[in-house]
Image (cartoon, rainbow, N blue to C red; front, side):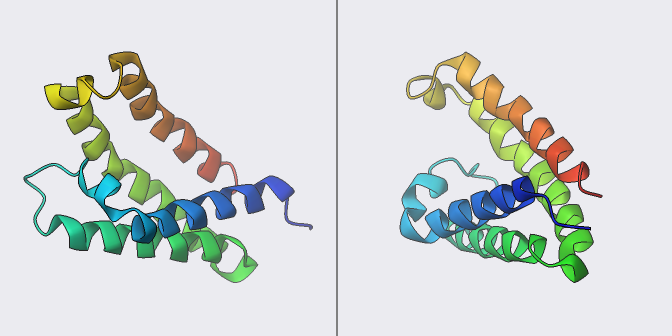
Length: 117
């Protein structure tokens, strides 16, 4: 069976976002809750994980593990999105509906990944 083209779109998206963690780390660092230790290290680790999962999506042998990893990663990232909704400082930068959209978007992205299992 041929790999659907939209799976490669998903892979490219995670690879790109992962690379952005290294290109613009301050942007990602600014949204990490203070209770998460070693914020900059977490930015780099999450970027590395996103790149790795994006690459792993491209190969039939690793796709299942990449999909499971993406779902787990997005579930963990819900903490960051919830923090952005709860912390008033983000309401100055982003309208509240945008923050809620980003929160619920995580579930859509999880479903998109689950679709390929």
